[in-house]
Image (cartoon, rainbow, N blue to C red; front, top):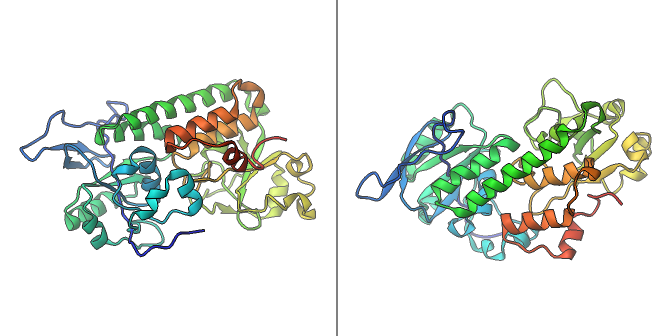
Length: 362
């Protein structure tokens, strides 16, 4: 259940990338302060040169994606949140985060960003993470001028961008933790890609990732949030205009039946628990064979919503779901390592069992 507070939320986003082409995406930063005020200049993913403190100790996130990323790197540096955390999320992320003010988010449907509250919390840097829209540079320049707080953007658009995202945060925050997470992301993606590359395309499972109250929305092939499904399997959901929304594309059961996926992953709050008893679904290959699963969702959905670094554990889980005989490790160990490294949380057997309910083969 969502905790209610009287606090407002903090927006933050920090990212630095320089010479993205020449340096493989590694951020550029002056090795020494640029002046007596102990600052340095970084170039973010938009090509903006931003002067930031030489040592960054107080940060804020611009929205939920930046918040999710920063919670894995430096929760102790966050002066507030862009959005409230549920009790279920706090169980993994840390109960002390409940005391942080909530500032709202700069972008997205809510439009509830409270500039006065952010200024009062006095972050040294606001960090924005995600896919850049055309007007973003101008908007961040305006916000930076209004608040007197440096604002930076780091691109993060797919599974292959997360290592670079953490590389940039390692420089900006002088963070060994971020550097460790960058290496983890690189290795995890490379491992799965190597396994999938050995499977002929015609032998990869025909799959669909379904969501919505009726299970008839889907993440279409090539969409912003379908990267895991597309990489590991043949995503049967093909539409002219894949949605980048967390709601996916509205499809309808009739079309899903025509595609007839042999493997289905449902979002946890969809119809996973009852679909096996639904006559309208009974003839789908995945349902008849019992080859349908529920995506784990704490503290964030493992596949999407948001499509961010939560996808790293989702990728490792889904690849093992598709190709269990091609991995020789224990999924329990993989999941436990991720939760310890990204959230500093020692996953109990009870928690693991709850996470994986409906997510593994019987």
